[in-house]
Length: 59
Ligand SMILES: [Cu+2]
Image (tube, rainbow, N blue to C red; front, side, top):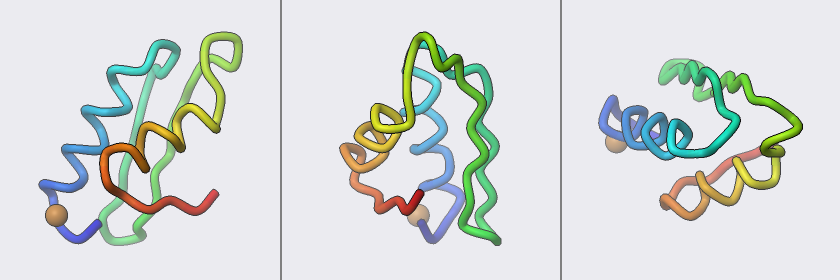
């Protein structure tokens, strides 16, 4: 993740996932804060979506 384009891409991917209420991605820190409903989704699904979009993620 190196620019605002990447940030926007990841946010769009996350927004499409059912249960995600908020995503706050920091380019500087290379961190994403994601609020989600654990009954509707889980961290593995979020991870798969981000990896599927072509990004690396460490949880
Ligand atoms: Cu980029």
